[in-house]
Amino acid sequence: MAAAPAPVRLDPLAFADDGCVALPARGGVRSATVVLDAGHGGPDPGAGGRTPNGATVLEKELTLAVSLAAADSLRDRGTTVVLTRSTDALGSPVEPGDVQDGALTTDASQEDLEARVRCANLARADALVSVHLNSFADTAVGGTETLYEPDRPLAPRSRALAQSLQTSIRTRLSELGRPPADRGVLDDSAGGESSSGHLVLLGPRVPGYIDEPSAMPAALVEPLFITNPADLDVVASSAGSAALGEAVSGGITEYLIGARRR
Ligand SMILES: [Zn+2]
Image (cartoon, rainbow, N blue to C red):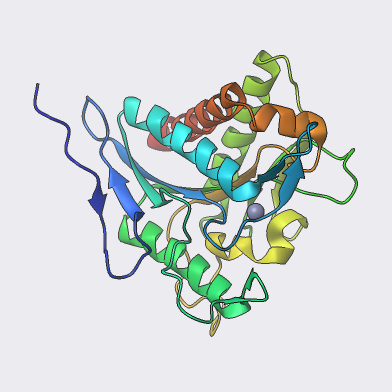
């Protein structure tokens, strides 16, 4: 058997180190390319949660763990995976002045999101899935939701992708004995991460802000709440993040199979 090809950086100058890397499918014929976008990274920790013993867990760590698990599973299913980041970094290289008072500036945050979109378009991906975790001041709030962008021609396919992901994640968590509250498939005007601008990833074009939106069906999963103790207990465990990765992979695969039939 020939050795597996090494990961390929699609455009080393445009992205952070270990950013925008293509990982070839294992075995079988390449059938599709999927971009997995682990939310946040590097100087942008995302939201934080606290374990029962008082340790702080960061969204950026958990989104990467889930994304890497999903990538592994997708490659085994014959899918090429492109990761917008594969380490604790942003999508774009961090430059002097990007972090002020300990936080990423608005401009740097936009550059990061644009780099992630550029990566997806460069990959000519069949689907883009961004992985985040939800957060809320009231720690009793928990559950699973998936977002898509309704105002563009790709919307019906993005909605189908989002629905497939939502179903797969809820099913897998139920199998784990941790059935989540079903917050549903939402369009990105419904709140959640939309106010923080993550959904720029999903489109549509906003002249002067997002000149080049993502060119493929896209969805953003919020499998659980990092601020909810029971949810965090699941996603912060290695079994939980592996299960969520498998669920994301399964949801994408179901979508791809359905898209081939349509
Ligand atoms: Zn996030």
